[in-house]
Length: 223
Image 1 (cartoon, helix red, strand yellow):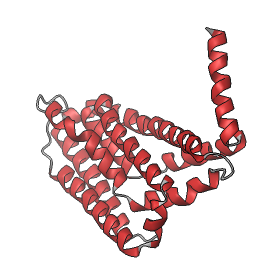
Image 2: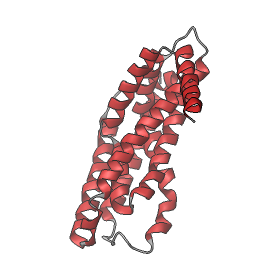
Image 3: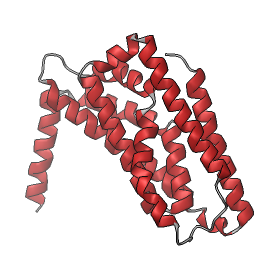
């Protein structure tokens, strides 16, 4: 078993070193951690879902967030990120769409009825959590532009690029999943407090305000 794990480790390390230097990968890993830890709409969604529905449901929203990251990386790999970065119209359209969606989420959260966390109807409402996570990340044009500016710095143009993008994508998703899971896990510790209608209402208002604030910040932001 140990021999098998050693062989697997050697193959993975060899793949990383053959396509991009280990030092370059470590630099990207550090950058990915810093970016993931920085609070944003994804962190707000992870915490709100973990607090309201529990860690298991939060993982569904996180899956949507990570799927969006992979799609954004695909856009960058195809060179479309540069188009978005240079097209003011495309940037504004996507920015307004993303801001409107975040504000809509905030209003829905603000107006939500203070129902108990063990409410029997809750599971039926969780089916759209993956889509919710997908849309939160996917409608953020600044994320694509930032990725378009960051990722090429870690790509070796003299080596085949497909595996390099695979390594970067796997690293980025792994780091973001761990960080978002920590946000969600931390939030679930406060679930016992949500037996009180006043605490539920306060939670709805706080996260509703955070979503609206994130949408407003995105709407007034520039490239």
